[in-house]
Image 1 (cartoon, helix red, strand yellow):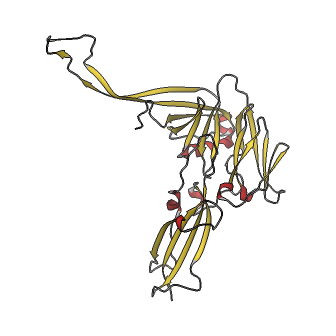
Image 2 (image 1 turned 120 degrees about the horizontal axis):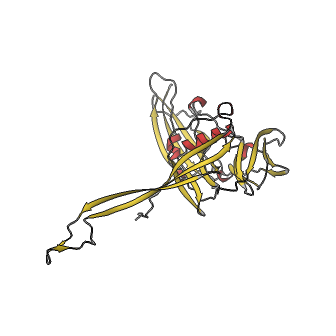
Image 3 (image 1 turned 180 degrees about the horizontal axis):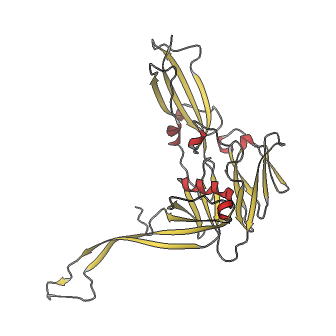
Length: 328
């Protein structure tokens, strides 16, 4: 008998692989086979994404989930295929994305979880870089080695490795501890004039990535308001006070915007800037607080060493909240 339909139970959960229970069941989907097709396709990515709640307060939390799909197959008589049904498929899910040219369902990096091979840090400041623990055996920062362990829990899959202040290289090795997978060059910037600002965004791998802006910052307040014309005359005296205006404002609020400059960076940072432009979640470390911001620059010209020699990127941001607190 030919395949007629499937019933798919979708489980999304934390913990170890396969440790789901009935409370983790998020969707049950029934789908019939199209008569001209030989298989049945179900897209689950957007359904799974509903269960990622991304937040950041300079804490580099881990956001991965286990996804188990239990598929039961039925023939044209609605009889279950007992020899192969049900089947269980389990995936480790990240809130990331691939590019169009990567094709359908691309598997992203299984080691370093940033695209660029260069990081800029203020002199005397430690940094963070994310790795996929399942595919990494050790990380060597200058002469210091960190052995990577993975106990299988979802909160272990992404690990943020601390880059000590004034380090120069980060080398990421395969699980055999011998094969060098990636070298990240760390540039420590001494900026005597401006205060560097750290912008953190969720990159294409679903991880938090830092980008420092070292040069000039411009801050601007944009105000919105409504107004009305009021009657100021006193009926009892048939006069009015000249200290009371006819026009009055209401619903006044404002938004603060920032213009930040990276300073001179190498061409490799184009990848980082691109992912910042595409990020849905962005924060800035500002006046000792972590605050949400929105990239307002909507286009960028990629700069290259051949055409531009040195590259500096200027990006506009808005704080993602009104100046006057109107949360009720």
